[in-house]
Length: 515
Image (cartoon, rainbow, N blue to C red; front, side):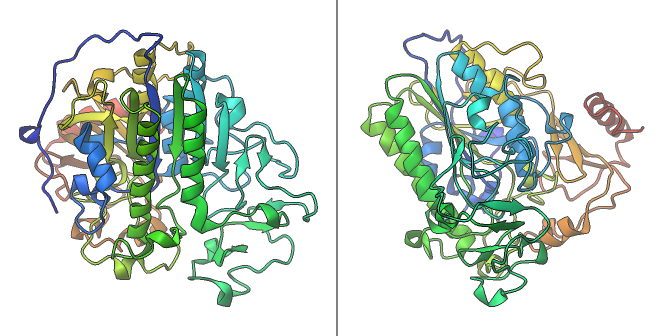
């Protein structure tokens, strides 16, 4: 594993400059948002067993950040924070959503798509959504509302929830893609079986690989899902084609948008479980399906860039590549990820991963590439948070954020472009019943309760720093400069630092911190 990059290793940081957006030259913006991809999964960040040449090239040609954070270590909260510029804990519904959840991205609230569209951008979302669909009592056989189309996106082609949940259909705008009136009506349920289709519990012999009981609902393509489904079989997706569908629809959006500035939110499903890469990528990593999914991501990145190049759009297109949270090796499906992982360490030099607030859960690979402005070869240790993207990019494109929107989003545009070392004063990290705050090199993890099922998943990491959770009754304080693996709790040694960070965290979490 490569060592953690330090300020001494910064290749190029140019002074901050003033940038006045030109109406005729607003950059196209693409956010490629991988799923459950860790800091140590990408070659540019130290991975040696998973080939990622296209992403590595993207990093070499732009700015690579070593201290950039998603807001939360799970998918729905992270996506909500990125698109709204608000901490997810401010919305009690912004948690891991069940299959039948209504949309939590409130239309007209000033999210990223709405702000960019008002600034003259054509907006699109293609990929995994997981921010709810409809009003919570959705009829999947009719026109559905609200969807991303009501939340500022001109084009929407999305996995409504996640690839391990029902319904296993694409939503194209306001309608289920490939819905056929000759099928039985499509129905879903989060917690009770409907219809007579096989489930992972009733017919385990039909499974490609088994899963835990929670993921043993209706079987689709040989895989049990969370929840139950009946009808609508003509619309059911092919898991092997999910990544290719995202790529081809994204290419189509780019081609259709080439005469105007566009914003494309491209949230990938890889490498969320169940892991079913396209056959052309199976075996390409040498460390099993989890690694093969990352290879597939790399292909998608490369083909997206090639489309931009063919259309003459590459120079003025800003691409941000990152992940919604850190990695998880075993996540309910027995797909051989642990056994085939060899010496690959997906969380790099850090501790923990998905669900947790350790660095491995929220410090994610983050690359910004824009040939027209971002200096190639930039490696920056500046502290960034995805919650700031809305405000930072809005200034770049001359967009106006409505009053009351993006309340936690700060303008750090120059830092995001690799032109400034001015850190965010602090970043807040959210996990499952866990909160943390980083300020400078100091990080405090708030005492709380961590469910046993979270601990179980992370005991499977090969990184020895990831095998033990501290007592949930004690605050934990770490100095990340000396201890990036968060292995030495300094709370007793520096009580005043604990008090300082608790007070700062309490300003943002009233009612959660009692002392």
